Length: 559
Image (cartoon, rainbow, N blue to C red; front, side, top):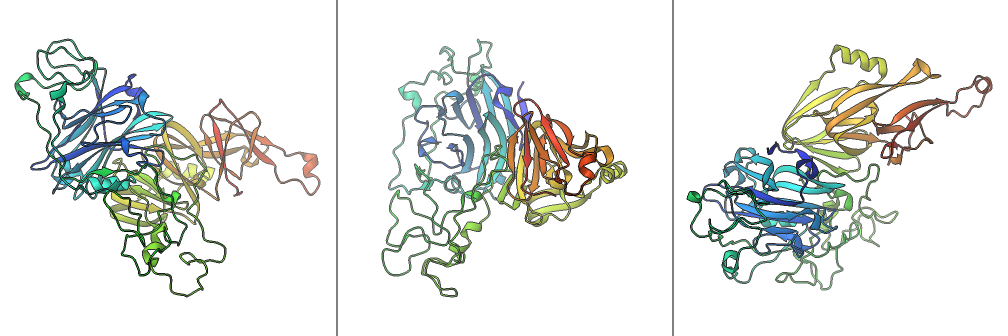
């Protein structure tokens, strides 16, 4: 039986099916609308670093044919074949998208879906409808992403602009067509491939097919075809697309140093906005952006995959010491900047990070959550909101009488607010470094002092750490479990260490640890030592034990 996903739901492919040869069907339609349904093969930075993995109507398969566009069949507007064990190591995400070809908005579409069929059986389906969107002209429907193993996520995120804007968001380029492309001959005219549904009812069932509705033996792959009465006598001709040819860059151009133009001027006179001095935009050429590309830290992390905890990429190249941001080398303070720099170039490194994920770090101290993704509320520390966009409601989240008693007694009380609605909320607190930790059925222990926000779907409770030789005889922490994201704040950049039998941490510097770790309080308090002045001050440490895979997180600061 197929699992019904909601927006934001994720699962390992191995939990859905043991197969790696998958059929992906997409259904989307609206009155008078035509859609371009595509698959983007992205690298670890969510960029289209190789345009051969942009699979769409003009390029129906990747070089090794691990991603193939099959066309409309079995009730699906478009279908793909994805062979996971043949995808190159450089591809970390497959993003299935749909965009309106021509005029129209996503609010005009009817009920649609994306589904996965494996071994002739539908294993998962994510449904959506136009009431979830407004003026968007493109839609990121669902993703396959690599996080240790391949996983599937129901995205359902609208995107302003059409296919060209979507391509630029993934780092691609758009080249205008010189002439309309010649009409392609349907694939059936040269012989249908063996994995596609048979063009005639009397043809034998293919090895790469899903079960048919008739009582014939089930095929191994692809979507179930419709009854013969509803099938056309001949394959439908694909509509001619009016969208320009999409060209993705083979390599991502490096970002220029902060405050400097991408290329030195080669001719006098200020260039037009968006044009490099001394260079004319040509057909199919890659026109550099008008300002330096955003710093690596502004790039969005892979969907469902967080960078190593505690490891933060550099926030762009900093100018030399004594040189103000946006000031050209050798330029005196207060002097007018050279032609071509301007306000846009000075503000470019601080632009908002692109959308596409529920939680997105904007920089080391600022986190954005998109409440319209996931369909669940967020619990955040009171007063941590610094900006919000859209229709967002904030309400008080009480812990109840028993919760207040426990929080006051253990020091793990959290003053929370509940954020609901459809919009984006930006969170920060006293310039602390913020880290998004995604839980998928596992658990983590974090002190309440180090928690900024978390998804309401997560279960949290106070956990007691037994010990002797310390005031009160115990320490306490908060334990989070379930599926969702918790935002942890630290003083400075933390370090993550694996748990070994000889791992000790200062109780005032520890931030978090895996909930499966065994924690033992190691006290170095001795009567003889305390009888004399000048002891070390390191009297209470935590010793961690556990199976391989457990970890601790320590910050360079003692509370």
